Amino acid sequence: MTDTPWLDRRQMAAWVRFVAVLELLPGVFDSQLRRDSGVTHFDYFVMAVLSESPNRTLRMAELAGATNATLSRLSHVVQRLEERGLVERIPGPGDRRVTNARLTEEGWAMMREAAPGHVATVRRHVIDVLTPEQVDQLAAISDAVLASIDPPGPMAAGYQRYDGPAGSGE
Amino acid sequence: MTDTPWLDRRQMAAWVRFVAVLELLPGVFDSQLRRDSGVTHFDYFVMAVLSESPNRTLRMAELAGATNATLSRLSHVVQRLEERGLVERIPGPGDRRVTNARLTEEGWAMMREAAPGHVATVRRHVIDVLTPEQVDQLAAISDAVLASIDPPGPMAAGYQRYDGPAGSGE
DNA sequence: TGAATCAAGTTGTAGCTTCAACTTTTGCGG
DNA sequence: CCGCAAAAGTTGAAGCTACAACTTGATTCA
Image 1 (cartoon, each protein chain N blue to C red):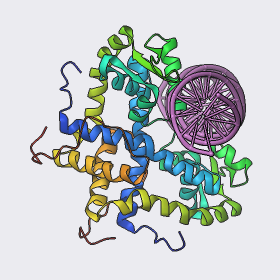
Image 2: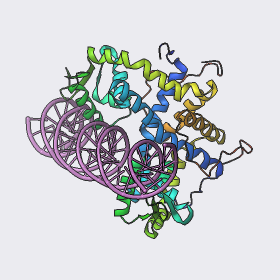
Image 3: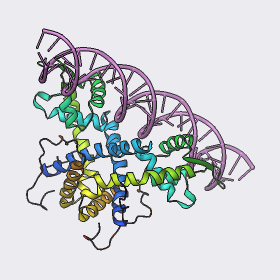
Image 4: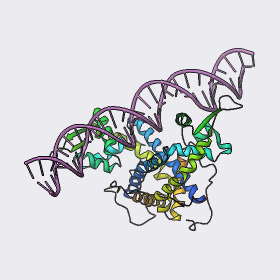
């Protein structure tokens, strides 16, 4: 802190652009999903994680980890999703402190309907505007950044790092 | 939309990590700045742009463009910053619809105090965890993404793209 | 076994962002 | 000139997130 060098021109160029992405991109996904399906991107992500879990169920704490959220935030969100019938909360069988969140049939139907439009948006603004090499670079850069944010990003369980041949995909 | 292919494993790996970054990184900067200087990252960014403008002044619309924000959001933020004496609003001289935002002396002093800690945080979590090549890659990736979000990112006026020799920096 | 500690969630509140509506000014075409 | 549309901001309400406090329920270990 005492003598941290300022950013040089090249670093500044990258940083300013990256900040713009950080600022604008979330809004793009939120509007698309809000408009087409009435949920936020975070709502969608929570339900997406649930939909891929055994029995479409997960404990709150694990769900929070998988979605990079605090338990508090998740609790509020799940409550709203429950009121809308998209998710239900089930008291844990063993440990009575535990709450399990489960994607309802209605929530599952909604996800199936929302997914194509969301994937198209992800492609349009990220995946398809990058070369396959850049997609890999983005993964590596994201890994490095996440590693620096100690709270061991327990996200991405599944979707392991892909270390296969580079430059073929798409 | 009708038949958008799903993401393959490699794309998914990149996407999931990137989403985590999008979700977690803003909070890192917000907490650091809130804790050390009592402002949000957006507050800081607004004042940073002002501090680099002629006479530390900019019209609201331009400031909004430079900070990737809506006029509405900026209006609220500037109002709060004004109440805290960090920024002042001055009616435009010519066009009477215009409002100019100006960084006060107090705001300027605050920026000088906050900057080192913020730069250190940016380095710790982004710049310094990446290789010089990755920094350039991040800039290119960000450019591609921003280009896809039509609203011509008028940000980064100044800080032009750096196309000099690669792999030397740091 | 019983007090202290920790874990899992929930809840209330303050603050920030979004969205839509609204006010003032300007600019224009007829 | 007049009326109408567009530009620049502001404002108020609704919704979401962060933070801190709080409630239960499990653990530990003396």
